[in-house]
Image (tube, rainbow, N blue to C red; front, side):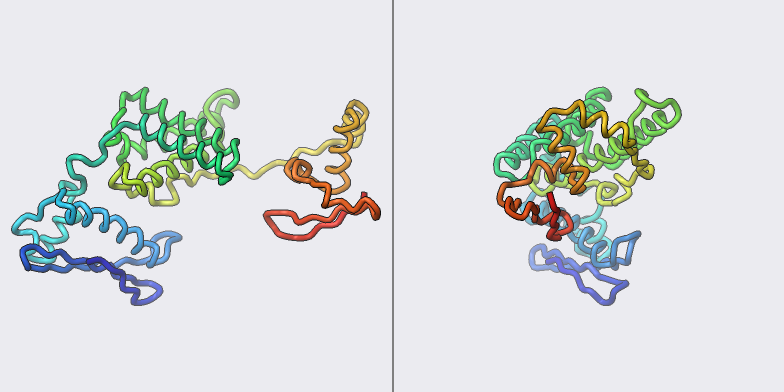
Amino acid sequence: MLYIDERSDDTCVVKFSLTRDGEKAEWSHTCKPLGKKTAMQVAEDFARDVDRRLDHIRNGDLPIPPDALESRKTLKAFVMGVDYRLPAKAQSGSIQKLYDDYLAKRRQDVRTGKIKIDSYDSDRTRLSNFLAYCKKRKKASLSAVVTADFLENYRTHQLDLVEERNEKGKPHGTSPYDAKHRLNALKAMLRWAYDKHQIEVLPRNLLNKEFADIALPKPKPKFFTVKQVEKLYKAANEQQRLWILLALNCGYLQSDIATLEHDMVNWKTGIIGRDRWPAPQNLRHVL
């Protein structure tokens, strides 16, 4: 049995119990806010981790030792102990297979319209960096790769590449944007694997937002001069001139122009009326 008792905004208690041959033992763990997470969020993360361990026990993957239920202390040691976290069959498989399975799922998402093809391409590129990192270090199995230490080493490697870019400039190292996207893509793949039972334990540092928390420089917008715009307009064909005018007069981005439809234009009044996202607002522009 496993449940969460919310006692206050600052405290939540996770309680669980085990029964063996009619003998029952209970244990509770108090969770408090951690970083940006509320006490309830911390408790939910902890409860999910405990529930995975209890699943192994209930399914017979981890037999309950006779002394495990003697006290709360021995119960805690049994459930939370490192020696009992994974059954022998857990974390089997290779990182290559996980990579292939995850990308197959992302391709399916493209076919069903859940994501765009460029999102799939971005995931493939970013995750291939992690795959290359594993191969270079001759780590192929999930048991060797999906550990807190190995993932933290990969994160440190990305930070080193960002520092190299800052010191030497292009083409050395990598940008902080690429590093952040790589770490977020890795988190998404491993969380998916965890939900699909391809991995049985999610390393704790992967649950922390700081894993992919890389400081990004403030964007420095670059502006066209009037002369540059005039030069571009003169060199453009009729279709390209339309795009330029829509961008200049309506403030449209590439996605706005690409999704503009005939029924959004009132050809009698010469007014474009459309909803714009992500901030839903009806915009009207006179042609």
